[in-house]
Length: 228
Image (cartoon, rainbow, N blue to C red; front, side, top):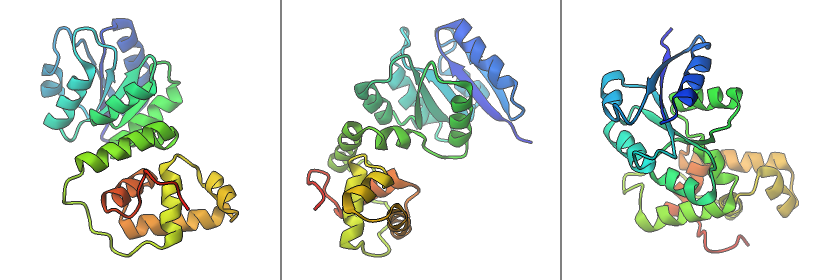
């Protein structure tokens, strides 16, 4: 079985050691303990990790710049930021750094392992943070729209969205869950799930957040306007 190689980059040796020790107890992980004040990017060059756990509060480096550099230089390495206090502004900067997840440094073992495994499979757990925090969702999506961050090579929409589907996407962009949207529109949650599945299929989207970004980029919804 190929193990997931996880590198822990943080300036606190006991914190690194604790995480590495716990992860090593799992049969599908191997770990690398990296002190950024001694080795920095050389660790990545040497070990080529699948996932990097990067402390967002480094004193010797700008963590966001380091995370972005890792993402640019090693596209197959997934960066998860570990923050002592992940507030909205920091979360926005973490998203811009191309990290695939943002976790509180006090995260429980089960959540940490789940996020690492998801990241290693190519998922973006950070989408959960975005869609659960409406302020961040709107700010991120507006930035994507203005900067055209996804470029011009996004897959074309394979089928037009209905008015109801665009309405539901707009509510998703505001951070509403399926249950909340069902309550707002006075229809069943299962009907909302069916619409979301159709939306993702039409847009060739990986998940709800990706669907919203694709729709914004294509001008199918406007995040500055409230759903009708």
